[in-house]
Picture: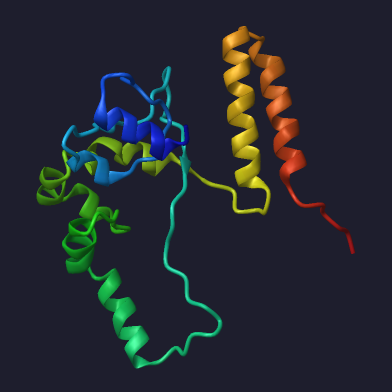
Length: 172
């Protein structure tokens, strides 16, 4: 199952009790059987994770006019980030909204309880081929864990898989 399927199952049954390193989906904290999110597990040091998700994009074809500018200013305003965005299952981009007691109360402390992971996260690579790498690497890691293969060899293989996922670099 993919992360959404796993979270759906977790929210509907007792078959799954832990999904380490899953992306956070705030809407699952309000389900009939709420899922609780916490900072990424770690053995000392800072939490490590990948920051994925979506942001705001403006198409080259868009007409950048006063109405668009006004909408973007509204979207990024503190009022919208603390109200409209979380009220509509969105995850605000404003740090102050993540620390807001009212926002946290409405969402089972999702923001407060995952903020350290977010702050320490590495931004997900954006190159064409990364998502396919992530799928292959996940399957490979399952095999490594099941077979109890050596960690050093697995890390070396993952590095090679990641390098192979990147577009060829050309030199001028």
